[in-house]
Length: 379
Image (cartoon, rainbow, N blue to C red; front, side, top):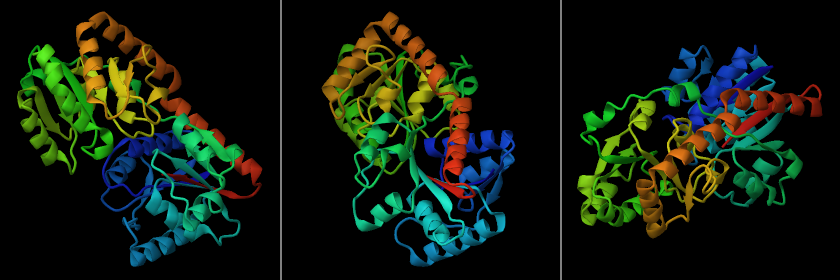
């Protein structure tokens, strides 16, 4: 198969990681795989390093930028006409609109699938009804919660929805036992919980910070390592100071060495108020860490309360504090839950499973539309 993936993100995150895993795996299976992304994006650099062909004459600008959209429509249409892709696999609102508009009049028209990576609502205006219901043939959902949300839309047919979880590299996240980062960050032998993710509202940092005064009152050696960057960093630093817990919080910024970060932790925390699946949770589970997370979106696909971690309601600092303290006090429980989480993701969230399911899905759609091509849009 001839396959094109597209993505508008310039930085790095769970979505970009998933795309690279799929592209790399499909190429290893012998497919002709290419990637259309904005020039200078992290994914472009890593894809080239992996031997994936990169087309970067696209902008995929945020918002309604008419000149940019017209440029991208023309560029994608020319690329598709030249390469005659069987699969065009796009990954967000900007690139999905550009691809849908570029390919809508092609003969044969490529099949359109959209993988939805988040639980954010789809606004039911006419444009989205066209994009999802008519310009899109099917939707790939990365969690059961997303699948059920999409199935409730009257313009989306359940038989055109597919559940394909994301994946985690066990060799990368489950192998290292290097805890030297603790000394570098000055936390020594303290109990260290960590949160890894962009400093954005939906990740729930503020509720975790609100939980800390009660936690450190009962566990004076409790320290929180905050890994990630984002627009709310200054606000969060002020919140921590106002709560009087700055001695218990380390802002480490964005780091490339996440496996080393996870190896330095005693506990992983994911207090999200919205989460499609939670790539960081998969990575923590692969590292064998006990996990405290919120019962939202796709998180329960990984964290089963009392089995592979502890779940609490979102935006509930009191419940979050009690779960953190329970893990702090009951180390045998924490160890047991961490081991169970590692076994669960190893069985259900492997990279080979992710690649194989995408490959099988493309073949199914090509059989449903003999002679047609396929567009998969990842949101």
